[in-house]
Image (cartoon, rainbow, N blue to C red):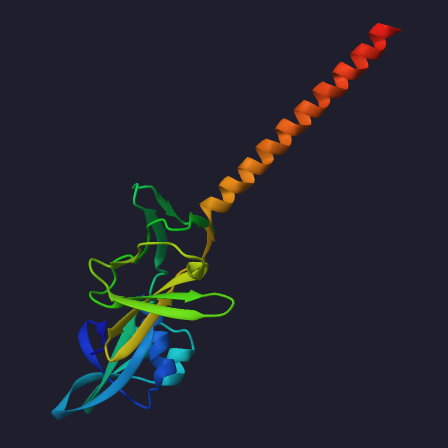
Length: 226
């Protein structure tokens, strides 16, 4: 229930309020933004403060807009804080953690875990790990435990290559809130192909060395004959 202190705390009378007026008040009180407004009919008239919407929008202090009044109608305003952005990070079996990386390359068949976490604001909620690639999209959901969730990928495959993000969902005061992390780009490399490339490169370098040695020896012999 919204109350304003003028001498002492008093309940507010609704007087044609809408959500935009409630939003101004929530901002004024440092409570974020307005969720909802509800009106309650008291059993009998009580001492309240009447605050007119025009005065709220004028930028005046709430106490300057308040007038003593008696009414059986009172106003409930629900304010909310905006959700902070979740954090997405990656860890591997060897314990190496890579957080806040714009791109990540993993070896095919390796074990990796994508973790979603958020600073404590509300209890409960869930994390949705979204995955998108050029030809598919998936969603994986886990409940938030200690404000985090961990998604295990036991063996990296080319199908795991794409963009990942964490979306935190929480239900507060009859409203669904959500906040999405940055994108994490994952590419999957094949270690076998990497080994083949290394062998080819080493072989070419060895052949070039042999060719230069033969040419050098041939030039040396020609110079010696002269």
